[in-house]
Image (cartoon, rainbow, N blue to C red; front, side, top):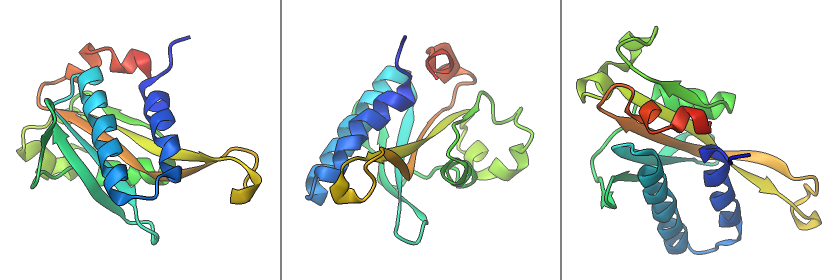
Length: 160
């Protein structure tokens, strides 16, 4: 059975708990995001991590080809929804989405297709107090593209 993209990304991120250095974490997040962009064909990708109070903060924004985006923004509603529910959100065309009016800023950028998935870590071992592999949401991975259905055409929906 083919491992879905979410499982691949979460498997890569599962080891981040053991990393103590913020610089190492940023390097690993960049590798994960660049690999995901290449795998899916998305134009842009964002990793938003939860702060202790639960607010999502954009940790990294990249375009295909390993280009760091310094002033790029994502939709706020979709990442918040995905983080709260723990469920993937795939929108093949924001113009057709029943909540299109809520995504005015994203649509103004020409973004049509969005894929957002929760990022989770599993806690193992008695030293963490959760020996049963309890999952904890740490943020979201958000991908978007200007072309309608581009991510779907890349086989992402089948993989999820």
